[in-house]
Image 1 (cartoon, rainbow, N blue to C red):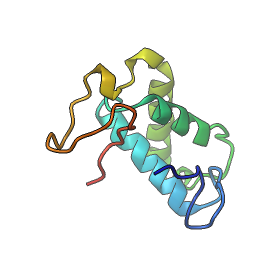
Image 2: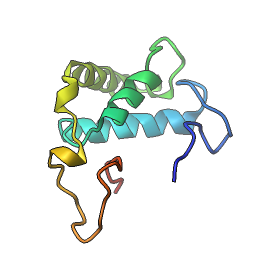
Image 3: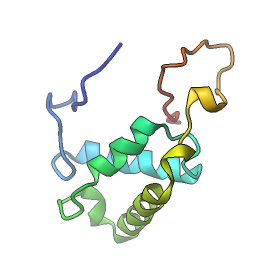
Image 4: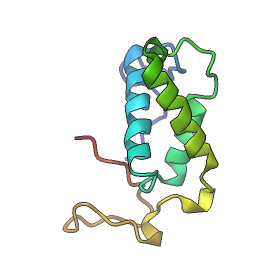
Length: 114
């Protein structure tokens, strides 16, 4: 299944700062990936997060908490500093959390949300 890159809550792409839940979800996703030193990040994820945060002047909800905002900015800098070849792919030995599940090599692996 292939989904369009849009916010299915509102039906369109929502840039940073326009939809609170999207801001919170992107911040959570970045925090989760950073906590694992971006070891589970795929090339498509590597493109998604900096793309979402391309305009840091937008009224992003995370800015309401100065500590969280500071952490987010540092995590974005860490993400941008990682060489593209350091991103995880199935072909390069990404360990699966559920070995019984069969994955096609073309599938993108996403981090699990607890």
